[in-house]
Amino acid sequence: MLVQICVGSSCHLKGSEKLVQLFQAAIADRKLEDKVELAGSFCMGKCNRIGVTVTVDDDIYAGVTTEEFDTFFEEKILKRLSDNKE
Image (cartoon, rainbow, N blue to C red):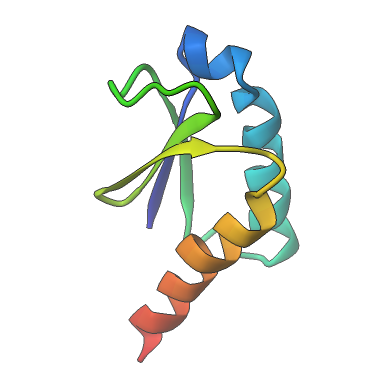
């Protein structure tokens, strides 16, 4: 699974650096380094006023915030990994 976090200027101002740190910690804590590839990306063209743009494989999610990180990680990463096992 490839997770890309926008680190362009707009997303940087909305907290992409902290989001990267949260992803790194969550991936390491769950020992998912062999299942999840984390990468930075410049502008994906989906800027909004709320949060950061994140892609999970081919799905684009705009407006991801640090406050909703736990829910996002569980629903978009852990659930997808679990679904792919079945």
